Amino acid sequence: MKLRLILCAIAAMFAAACDPPAQKAKAAPEPAPAPAKTQAPPPPRLDHETIIGTWSFDGSCASGDGMGLRPDNTAFYDEWGTGTWSINRQNQIVLDLVRREMGVEEDPGEPVTLTIDVRASSDEALEVVVNGAGEEPRETTAMRCS
Picture (cartoon, rainbow, N blue to C red):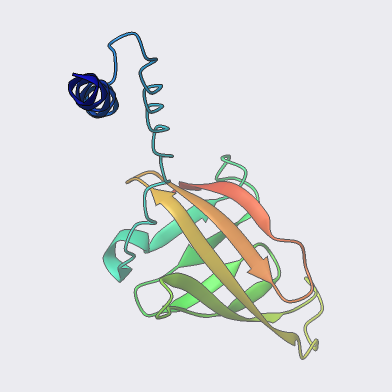
């Protein structure tokens, strides 16, 4: 009889270990995942046909603050630079210019290369960052004039 009581007590302990009471605290629910950060859309793919024209950086189309990209790949920039333009493998507009002082006929000029990152575009505007050697990047909106 004592043996029977001992075996029953052992069986009860095993049963308790295998089937914990419902009153035990449930594990805390896992927190919801954080919303994914939205990334800016990739910059537009540039092609010659869509960027040819005259672009104003101040929106007036009347000042010299802008650039012109011609179909023959010649370019002008502000009132001081003339040269050529291209689109490089990094999808940037590259202006290879000669900086000349206005009104000085015999000024041989200084070579200047500008790279222009186009962040967004439409038929009428380009969101750009103009980068020049030794100068602070200039973020601006270029409005199409022609």
